[in-house]
Image 1 (cartoon, rainbow, N blue to C red):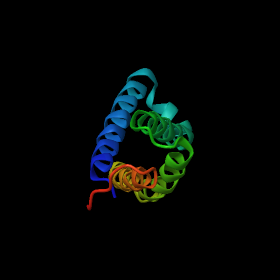
Image 2 (cartoon, rainbow, N blue to C red; image 1 turned 90 degrees about the vertical axis):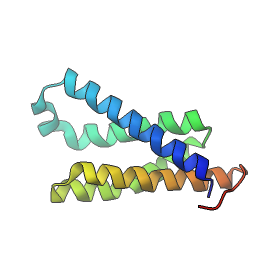
Image 3 (cartoon, helix red, strand yellow; image 1 turned 180 degrees about the vertical axis):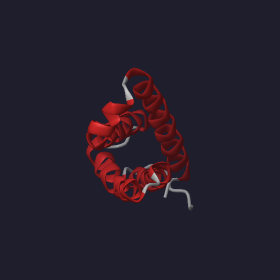
Length: 112
């Protein structure tokens, strides 16, 4: 596990999701999220993951697979009413996935 990549991926995804969330909240009415949040949320999550993966030099396909898998806890959290807790868990899971991807690409491994 590459700890540096874990931290960078986690911070990058947190920042990207926060910036995009604020921008969408300012640009769109709340009713949009009631009607289309089920599509906009996952789309925004994947877009942010793609940007962060590219910035970190990670393979895009593998990073997006990890983002989909990490999004499962977030989807469950939405159903039970704790959306932002699910997003936080998903960020941690995805960051750990990225740390493993960095090792698989031959970057120096650091124990976590």
